[in-house]
Amino acid sequence: MSRKITFLTLFLWLMTVTFPVIAQQKADTTCIFRFVPQKDMFYVPWKGNDTELARLLEYIENNKATILDGKLPLLVDGYCKSQGSKAENLATAKIRANRVKSELIIRAKIKEENFITHNHATEGDFVTVRLTVPVKETAVTDAEAEARLAAEPTVAGRRERQKAEAAAQQNTLADTPSETKITTDHHLSLRANLLRWATLTPDLGLEWRICPSWGIAVNGSWTSWTWSDKDRRYALWEVAPEVRYYMGEKKAWYLGAMFKTGQFNYKLSETGKQGDLMGGGITAGYQLRLNKALDLDFNLGLGYLNVDFEKYEVIDDVRVRRGNETKDWYGPINAGVTLVWKLF
Image 1 (spheres, rainbow, N blue to C red):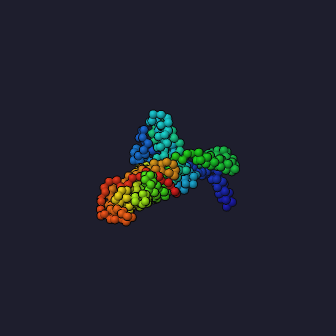
Image 2: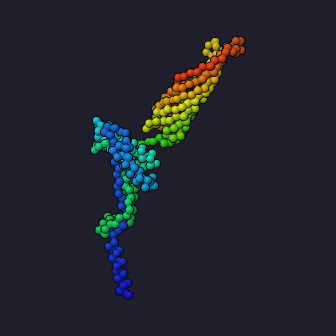
Image 3: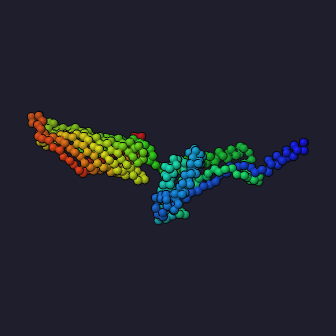
């Protein structure tokens, strides 16, 4: 019995000495996205980009918590050598890298700070995204284990190395410029049509961007002016709600549908006109970004207005009615150069 115990003890000791050490490894997974020479558009179905994108999205999804915690950054390298100069190549490489990152931010729901980006004016027309993906534990020989232990002889040494690596990674993330800004925020904007204000007609409005592509706006105008002992008058109020669809990568161009209603009272000569208006139409425009908070909105509306009004004259301070008229108008129904201020 004692021999069996001795043999079992010796066997367990040998297993402890000779059994491979289990260690955690990491495998680099690199996805390559091809670009048309001299172009910066990211064509997903082109040259296998769709397959690479699907593969990368799967890796990101499997490691999303670690990525969002900042422990597993995505290394993005943009390349271009088809332009005429180094500066143009670097600029194109930067745009290409940003387009790939934008696609990942939108599809994988990650953030700009989860990337480390470098751009190069060499090698080719592509963007690489490298993700150091943790894999299953694999066996390590005794010699490899001893070499690792020799490199890090103490627990304190290993901890110091880990701290240094974490600090280096944090500094790299801090130094990496934020190159990709995607309009994913839902913001409320205050609007003022400068063309209306130029005609002494105060105009204010609000727009709620419910998502990057859709917005709901409403503008209102009101004014009341009299002169020549109140014999001349310029007065009106209008309300114009509008639904907009923003297009393009920067969401700067848009098409919309607008409804307009209001009342007016004009007396710029001996005969005045007072009545109601109602109509609507299609709007189109472009928003030029001035800075982080301000845009300039150039817009034009085409459609139909129905105007129902009465004519009048003022005799001895008494308004004398001179008949009714109804007119239909087809053409421009709205125009604006609007200052847009993003409140939040």
